[in-house]
Image (tube, rainbow, N blue to C red; front, side, top):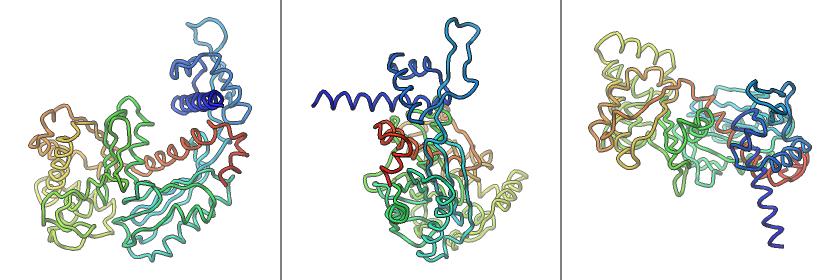
Length: 411
C-alpha cells in the first residue's frame, strides 16, 4: 500500500508541475515544459494527454509552429482551458467594493463595482452588500470553485477573518465563514498588499523572485513582503503593516487612532493635510480624491511651498521605515503601487536620503524602485493566482475527475 501511496503522490506532484509550467508560460510546447520541470518527454506526453481528456488543458488552434532552426515534428503548444473552472475575486478597499468572475486561464468573465461609504456603513449592511454582489456574479456564471476576498487591513493567519481595517470601524468580521455558508464555496480572506506581491511575481518572475516588496502608496500605506521566495505573514495575522510602524512617537494622528505612524505622514490624507497647513493632530480626511492629489503634486513640482514640504515629510517617513526594515532583511527591490506612485518623482529623493541615514542604507545606491499607479489590477491578479493555484494543486492535480465533478467535490 505504501508503494501505491508513493505512486499517487508522485503522479499528483507531476500533474501539478505540468499545470504550473503552463500557467507560468502561457502556451508552452511539451519540450518547453520538459525544460522547465525536468520531467521526461514521455511523462509529459502522458500527463498532458490525461489533462486534455479531462478538459483541463487544450491545444489551441494554430499552435503547430515549427521554428525555422528546428527539424522534426512541429512543436504543439498547450494552454489552460478557460472553461475548466471559474473563481471569484473580491476587493474591499476605502469606499470601494469590487468583484469579478475569472476563468481558469485567468481571463475576466464578468465584474461589478460599487461605491459605498466604508467608514459609515453598518456592519450588517457591509456584509449584505458583499453577499448581494457575489450572488449576482454567481448566478450569471458556472459555479466557481474558489472565492478570494482581499481587504485593506489585517486578516488572521488562517485567512478566515478580517481582524481590523482602517477603512471601517468594524472588527473581527468572519468573512470566510459567512461566504462559505452562503455559497458553499471554499473562501479565503487576504491582505491586499500581499496579493499585489503575488501578482508581481507572476508578471516579472526574474525581478520579483526571492526577496522583494510591494508597497501601497494610496490613502493608506501598506506592504506585501516576500522573503526567500515565501510570502511573509505573521504568526497570528497577515502581517506586513508597514504603514503603522511608528515614525515619530506622539506625532501626527493616523487613521488607526495612534500617533506618529508612517502613514500619518505619507498617506494621501496626510500629504493633503500638510499641504493645507492643517494641524497634524486634526482628524484624517476620508474623501481626498485623486484629482486633488494630482493638483497638490503639480503645485509641489512648480516650486517651494507647503505642497513640496508635504512630499518631503512623506518621503522621509517612508525612507526611514524602509531603512529600518533593510537593516533587518538587507535591501530588496521595491514596487511602489497606487495613486501615490504618480508623484513618486517627488518622493524618491527624500526616500533615498532617509534610507542612506540608516543602517539599512549601507548599499542604498543599489536599491531599485519601480512605480505602478493602479493597484486594483494587481490585487485582482494576485487573488486570481491564489485561487487558481489552489485549484491546480488541490483539485486537478489530485485527479478528482472532470472539472464538472471537481465542482461537486467542493460544493
